[in-house]
Length: 237
Length: 197
Image (cartoon, rainbow over all chains, first blue to last red):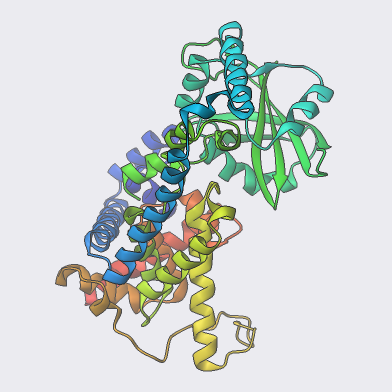
């Protein structure tokens, strides 16, 4: 007996690739399943077209004006800030500090061929996570390659569904890119300097996380801020 | 969600956010292109979802309410990785507030037998007239509007081309299995109603 949900997923193209062949065979051999499949294809197209129709309908003028106004006002703030720049202020201590920071970051990039830190200890991970809620970013091309393959939005969404219940040494699977899932294990947990809960998860298999890099075992540090878990550090092991 | 928007939203959470405090504004401007934006695509996508949340009430009013809320709290939500989820939650809240105001509901939106109260608005605005779409799809929307709250919501989330994980977050359902089974049942019901329309 084939589950109708599997037929729906097959119709939508969202079925796990490992199951596709088996489900297809069952549908091909059963006219009743074929009819169910046709119905799901029909409703799928219907909903898709309905969504596109609504999106192509014009917005009411008041809403349209508000969007334009909002985007104008946000870009105006930025433009005004930009106009206030004066060449004579170039020696201002603030800009000098920024220039120095640039030199430091870019020179660091030449010497670091990976943007992630090579760390093994929990202490170091804690130190890194304490810095901010944004990923550390070092070097040039490898960081860009990393983001070509890693889907942080998808990762954050999925980790938020399971992170609260994760226990030490528990294994789980999570998406790291649009199509690829990877197995992880929670190896540690700690509190950062703001007393936010953080967890360290480690990949169980070596994974290529950059397009032109090598396969690596790596750990990810996630922290909870305002009830939302997000990725704060990536460490090659 | 269209591919353009999906691509843009997938870059929203790039970890450049703290750079705005440290770097020159011109670089911040470039980075800002990849961040959240309340543009037309985003708002139109909300209209699709609002058509599933509201029943006989103006979906544009819900979208307007969510827009105003996010605009007011822009500093807080500018860098949120799932701005759409915030907007959807706000629209649901606004719809329930509106119903309570009109019908003097108390805080309990569940019947004595534990089943959900079917929410409908007594003001009876014709949603089909509000959204200017072809008569063929007006008919489809009308049929979806006549379905239960849960079906309306999940079918319009599907119409916005959301994947199952996103639907789970936006419906607040605990398991992915429940989302799949609800969507499957609602699509069957839609098919049946289309046949008999």
